[in-house]
Amino acid sequence: MDLQKQPAAAASHPTRNRLGVVALILGMLLVGPVMIAIGVGLRLADDQLLETGTRTTGTITEVQDGVEASDMDFRVDYRSTDDVVHSVWESWDISDRPSVGDEVVIVYRATDPGAAVVEGYGGEGEWMTGLGVVFTVILGGTGVMMLVMAARGRSERAQARRAAIQASAGQR
Image (cartoon, rainbow, N blue to C red; front, side, top):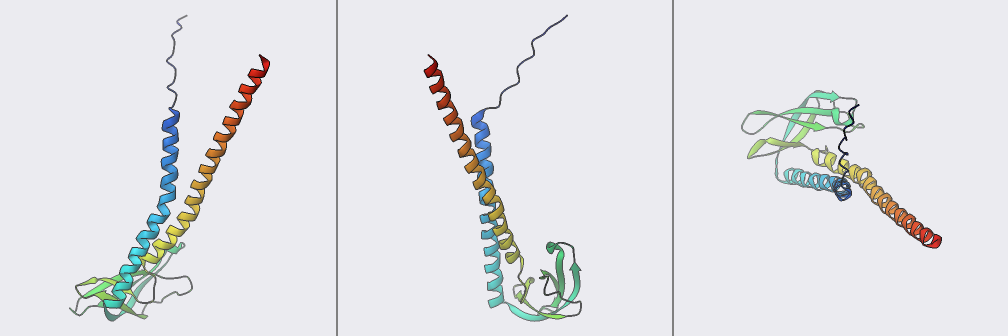
């Protein structure tokens, strides 16, 4: 019978594991605020366009009514001052469903007529900010819970070690 020693499996390094968990938690805590910052930036750009852009009317040519909120959007065709027809997609709220053929106000950048927003609708910045808040609450809360649980586990292990040391000292 040939008995060969098998090499022992490499034990994972505890410090490396902790660093991975810390990196995961930090990532979870940062995703939401980064999304909020991006959303606020997009909203500010839309607000600036609404203040300084060229206004025209556009006609809703397509409405997508998907199952998820991210699938509820519509396309508006509009003609810029250079007599070129452009299209812009915008999301709509569940309580404000647009219809094909409706006219809406479009605000576009005179130097770039393809950059436009539909007046009265939220835009990408609003969606991104809202999703960032949700991620902050869910992922941030999960990250904080992981930190609390890790601290509690370290405290309990330290108490168990102290109790074991006291017990072994008392038996001598």
